[in-house]
Length: 226
Ligand code: SF4
View (cartoon, rainbow, N blue to C red):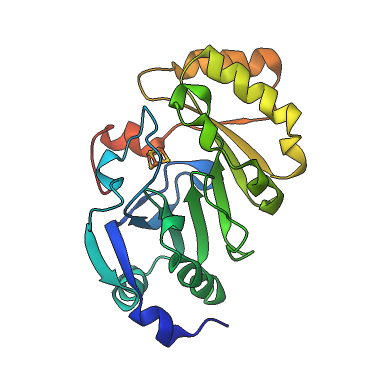
C-alpha cells in the first residue's frame, strides 16, 4: 500500500490538469481526467505539446494533495497521466499506484525512453516507439518492451511511408504482438493522410489499430486543455 501522507506532500511540476474526452488508444471517446506533467528530454519534430517540454522550466508546482483533490472532485474514475514525459518526475510512480489502489483506471502515456520497470502493474501503459521521422529514434529503449503486457499498447506515430515501413518491420522483428494487446498507428497531423495510412495497413493486413487523435477532430489541433 502507498503511504497517502507521503504523496500528499510531494510536489509535481504540472503543465495542465483538465477533464476531456480521451482522444487516443483503445479508450478513445471516454471522459477522462488528464494530468499533464511538465518536462520532456526529447524533441520530436512533430511534437504537439511544445509548451510542456522545457525540463528546467517550473510550469506550475502543485502538491499531490491538490492533484488528488481535483481528480476526486471531477467525479471521473479514469485518469490519464501524460506530458511532456511523466516519468521524469519519479514521484508520479506512487501517485499512479495510489490511484490504482483506489479503483481508478490509470493510463500512462510515455515516450518509452525512460525505464518503465517500476510502474505499477495495474497501470495501463501506452508506450511510444519513435519512428525515424520523429528524429528521436535513437532514444528508443527497447528493454522496456519486456515490462509491457497484454493490457498495454505500443504507439507508432507515422509521418510518411518510410516511417510506416520502419514500424511494420519493428512489429515482426521485435515480435511486439507477443507483448502487448494493441499496436497503434497514428498519422502525424497534416503530414500523413489517414486515408493513405489506412490503405497501407489494409494492403499489408497489419495487426494494428488506426489511431486518430479524436480531440483534434473535435476541437482543432491547437486547442489546449482538451
Ligand atoms: S516525447 Fe512526446 S512530449 Fe516529448 S517531444 Fe516527443 S511528442 Fe513531445
